[in-house]
Structure formats: C-alpha cells, structure tokens
Image 1 (cartoon, protein in one colour):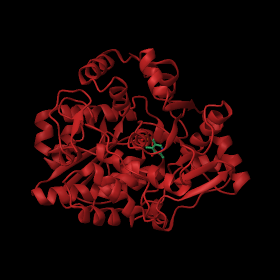
Image 2 (tube, rainbow, N blue to C red):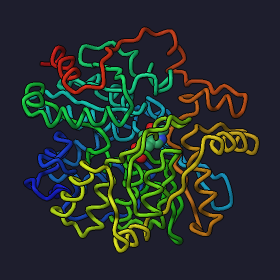
Image 3 (tube, rainbow, N blue to C red):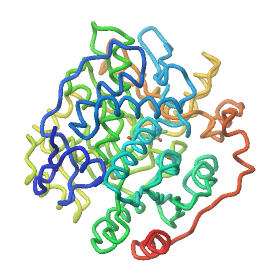
Length: 459
Ligand SMILES: *Cc1c(COP(=O)(O)O)cnc(C)c1O
C-alpha cells in the first residue's frame, strides 16, 4: 500500500512515512494510491476488527501480531465493553456512541492508536519527534492523553484561548509532563490551524524540533476512524445501505465514512451536519466554498471554517488530478474562494448531503431527546440529530440512519444544562478535574512567536 499527495508533486510514500509526516512535502494531503477492499468484521471484538481493517493500510510497517497488540492496548483504555456501542432511538434510527474513550470524544479512537503506532516506529528508528496539533477543543486532549506516555515524542497543542469549554481546556492542561506543551493562542481555531501549517512550512524550525502532525489531516487517523463504520455495519447486518449523519468540522470523520464506502462497505449517503459555521453546507449545496469569519457556537469543536480534509474529496472528484488540485488549492489560498464546477458537485452529491443547524435547534434537540428518552446528548450529537431528521423529512435520506455521537454530554455541561436543567456528571476518572492545577503558556496568533515557545522547550 503506497500513498500519493493530493497535490501530485511529492514522491509516493509508505505508511510509516505518512504516519510520521502528516502533511506531504508539496503541501498536499496523503491519500492511498488505490483504496483497499474490506468486509464488515465477523468478530464482535472491536480491537480485533480494527487490526483486520487497519492491516489494509499499514503495508509492512507492523507485523499483524504487533498491530493486534497495539489496537488491543489502544481500545482497552475505553470504558465501554463494546467500545463503540450502538443505541436504537427510533424506527430506523440509531446513535453510535463514540465517547467512551479516555477524553470523552471520538478523537480518542484515532489518537489512542496513533500514540502507540508513533512510539513503536520511533523506538525502532531510535528517533524523537515533536508532534504539533491545533485543536478546536477535543483533538488536543486526545493527543495529549495518547502521547504523554510516549518516550520518543513531545506534544505541542495550540488551542484558541477562551473558545474551548472549561472541561475541554482542563482535560488538556491538567497534565504536568515534560513532553507536553499547551499553548493558549490569542486567536480562533482557523488561525491556530494556519500557524501549524506555517510552522511546517518553516523548514529550519521543522527540522530543528523534528516536527510531526496528528491533526485530522493525518491519514492514519482517518484509517482508524473507518473502523467504526465497519463495526456498525456488522451490527446492523447486510441488506439496505446504511446512511450515516456526522457532525462535521474539519471533514475528517465524515470523510472516513466515505473511505469505508470506497473500501466496499454498503454505505448509503453521508450527511454532513454543520453548525452555524456552514461553509461545507454552502459548498455542497451551491458549489461555492468560501470561508467567512468563525462563529462561536454551542458546538465549539465544529467552529471551523476551512475544512482541511475537503481537499481529499476534491482531489478524488477531480479524477485524482494532483496538478489540478494544487492549482485550485493555491488559488483558494490566495483568494479564499473556490468554485466547484457543476459536474464535480454532482459527483460529490451522489455520496454527500448536508444540513446546517442553529444553536436554537441544537438546544431544542437536547431538550426533546432528554424528554423522550431520559438520556442526555452533547451539542455536537444534537447537531447531527437535527440534521438527520431534517434530511429524512426532506426525502434525502431513507432506510437506516446512524447518527454519530461524537462527545460525552459532560464535556459540554453548559449547553446541556441550558437545554434540560440537568448537569451531566463527569465520568469517575475525571471527577476531580476542576481541582487539578493547569499547565499552559500563552502566545499571540503569530507563527514566529509560537516557534520560539516551542524551540525553548523542544529545540
Ligand atoms: C472534532 C469533532 C467533530 C468534528 O469532526 P471532524 O472530523 O473535524 O469533522 C465533531 N464533534 C466533536 C465532539 C469533535 O470533537
């Protein structure tokens, strides 16, 4: 299994390179040269299923036994025996609970595994890396909890100051470890993400600290996220195609569903559910992909305008033409405006449909879900539920629909409380979170300033 860059000007790379490099050297994103084929797992054991599916992507980077050990270790950190349990909430409606990992959001699925893959590769090579991530709230905690135990990796996390919830911030900053560096950036998530890109582009700095990435542009993360699409299909059985509705920010999780479909899984349509940051919804309905300012919403992990992984979809929709993708992305970088031609949009619309959801609808859904089922859902999940219902009502979805529940309600207590009057309890492992001391640096939204802070620790 070899990988190519969406911008067509990087050498083909193996899994190990793709894992540790993050971004391709031509500024593009790695994608497999051809999608491997896989079937829904027969084993009910999530970790075993994960090893089977991931073996399609890892080439000869790990032995099959070693891969199995690492998936077992990664998913034993989850507090539900099914790892990704499926709950029926209506006639043909399910919720896929992806928040039973150590930091209570779906990011743990990829990150717990990535931490282990990284450590294995680095140990073998006798190398050290500095992993950097920008976070809209959940990636950072997941990365820190996955990488803090690594002997061979430092981890730097940039979060937009004041734009993540207290619980999200504390889950990142309450770890005191020499290889963990939290930076609160005076800016929004898109600025954090742009700074990470700028730091990679600064070759001298990137080489000095041996910079590497685990943002959702990292192919290994997407590969890890295909697994729960497969295990869900196995649980629901064959027959009708299964539709998935996915609360979306950076287009990573929903793209993983698309990858599962390319791998032969019987997926129907993929519903892109956005909050008021609806650039993707607008792009998918009008063909105009044009970021505005970031709106602060009740679902902050999706307060994103530029959805990095969208480039992977465009590349494929353009017939895997790297030169054309590079030209489009360059123009987008300059003009912040991208027009998707009608024929390309038609192709995309065969797989993807979308809906944008307001904060008022989000609160209403948390409330009505609680009144109907007695269960609390987090605001991101609520965005997904509102979109699933609207898309079904509009006739765009029929048959089984699975909405991905991407975070535990206790991660977003204010929204849940506002909607229901109930305070969702943190899990036992986190019950003293608000008493723990915090460790972080502060910096302006400036790549050079942040490079100095990082060099001071890891240079
Ligand atoms: C990251 C995140 C999302 C969005 O996922 P993408 O892969 O960026 O589309 C949705 N919900 C929660 C809770 C998240 O943490």
